Image 1 (tube, rainbow, N blue to C red):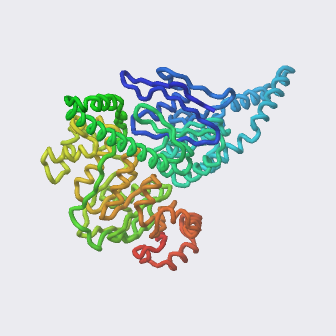
Image 2: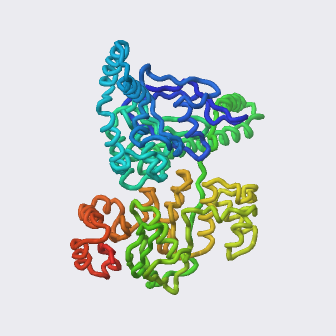
Length: 568
């Protein structure tokens, strides 16, 4: 068990939260939620002991081990991958190294023998003899192939390092597991594996996440960081949302009734205070009035931007035709003769583990990258707005936000642009901030503002939820659902994909695609899709089964919404 007693943290004169007393118990997964800057990650640091609160204490059941998901992806670059995972249980790793060092001695003494025996007993008690296989199982589950286990961390890609650090946190089944945004940079398969692992985990999990689907899947309780306090709710994220909204409505309704009663009493007192026959009643009502106290409705730290994409022109039937596009980057085949036809009511989610392939396709469609072969053609009624994965180049100038957005606006009036920015949470002086000092989340909101103000009828998004808080993700989700045009997008937010997409295109290793007119959940649960995925990833150069499947489906089935595999 881990608990807090009267925790308060002040940053300057501002209190992030005050007098927080919460008990976290075994068998529960706690999701920590709140707006950006509310103090979620800070609270985890206090629980882990890496940050001292202004006042209050943290108590942990004696003998219990805390494990924290590391954020520094370069910290263990000199270590072997498997060793990095086992270091997650520091005491076990120390015992293992001391034991190995003793056995490596040439002059093995009696004292060494006694100490080795003690270490062997302790090592066995901690299931040390299964440490290698347990660490390997975690790595394999997260998609780190066995041949990588003996390599140095420095030889891994960024996404692979993220998975190793996650395996390190999970290793040895800690008593208390603290994780800050564990699904960031994980592919679909790794997130699903992690969800199942946490569902079956019997100890304490405390996790910060912006992924609503993930929180719904794994959490049994929600810690809401808001109003300068941290409040615990039983249930998952959806249950918290419904409960918190109901509580706010009830408080507002209670205050409304109190205000009506106050007006009624004040009116009676005003009319009859000077009337001798009514003076006793007026005095009684004065006492009743003094007893009425309105509930203190403190302003929430949560702010919801207004995201509404409105196309200036209706889109025709001829939207987009992609014919045999291939692309190889640094010797890696990202796209292999990709072909599909986009319909006028399609919202296509591009999925699959190769993020670079999706980005390459979007860049080709926007004219930012040339394909090695193949062509594409946009319909004459289409206009495109693009959200790139990397927006760094857009924000190098020192111009204020309103001037930056003004250059993309068909209406150059400053008042119009500033009003638009206000709806995107850049009110007042915030709209004059230089764009080169904006945070990641602010940049994303600027890019979404540019897309909205363009009036395009085709929207292309490459991971738009990166850096966004839960409130902005919810607003974006709603905006994408309501948009009457067509959309092509890649996004890790499961709920956004499920509620927005009506068609799924998975880019497989080697650049082939599976194309299916379906929802995301139906796609993931489809045994047919799983079998297709196995067949077409078995041999990246293609095989007889793949050729037979393509012939059976036919070249025009993508436009009709049937599953297809593009392989050339």
